[in-house]
Image 1 (tube, rainbow, N blue to C red):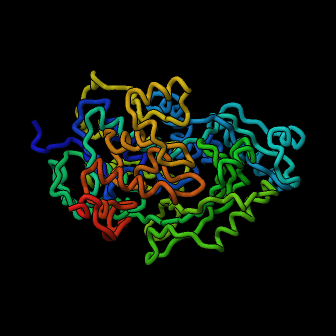
Image 2: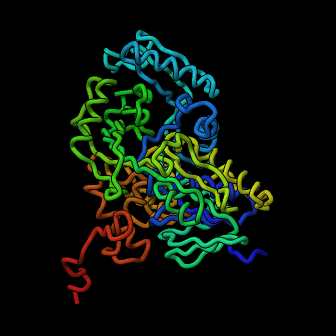
Length: 496
């Protein structure tokens, strides 16, 4: 028996860290994955475009290209096994002039080299049959039928839960302060105490550079690139039928217009490199909101802006060398100077798509580094998840209410989310502990009123189910408290 309680510790519980944990849970390895936040999927994974990219964009021969293609192949089957939403709606890269046409021809050739199936260039007449609301200035598009959409936070949570169901340990509110390593392994000082493991995986996302240097491993920098989005009500779901891209620029794939798996329309992102003083800042601004809407009108001329129900921002992790020169690929490697330390850094787009494939690759690296494991013969492939009352048939709704009367109590009227679903989200293998956690798992608060009506009831349910005072319930952990104090005594106290 090893003197360490874990064989592998994974720092970071976004979709990449969760995917590594799930792949390791297919083996007999003792696995722990941790995050400094109070939930999984609280960094880059929670706020992105939710696109499973086809794979025509990455440069052939890169890790991005390799894992994009493999991840795209995995996701549909994974969604069925783990019960998260997946819709293969295809994508279109729009060209507006001859220069754009040359770019989509180049992407077509790149996609063919990468092994993307079904690619074709669609001319204007056919294109407008596919997308009637396109701007009339569009002249052609690259069509990739294998592109799909998912809910990034739903998928991340499902993958993480599958890992836990199969024996992995998840530690929340566990920030890493120091890493000491020797020939026997790693000792990690955290807010949860000292943790020990033979192998360490750095999947810390926006802070992967800091973790790498903390371990004495490869030195690189993460540039935090903020991207703002806006979201339209699901009454606008017919605005587009595919993921609409514009020809890519220096900062990435540009502003897209797409439907989401929940029927909303998503527009964005912008691209703003944050200064060190503003690291982690996800506020939105009127200037960038105007910028992404103006850019989106190149694709769809008439954007129903009166139906915008929310705006938000996510942050991408862009890896560069210490001198600022671009790396232009994922960093996925065992460190040359720190044996047993696996760097998984710079996982920007197509990182979401690539995550399941990265999980496979990291396990291979660990085995190559000396991890001795066998197949987990009791591995549970499927995860049930939470039953959706809104999407259930009348018979299924009746059966849900028979089993648990709380499914007959609607809490979120906009999205038709029941008390039964909220309670289930709190008591699942990785349960919600705050309002945002409930929202990401059930969509309670994601409708047109943006939690204006349901947040008091959700707060009450969290308080009751976790047996904590209502004033201790937070929006997203830390000190983001919803309530400050009681304003009046309970009725029972008045009666006395």
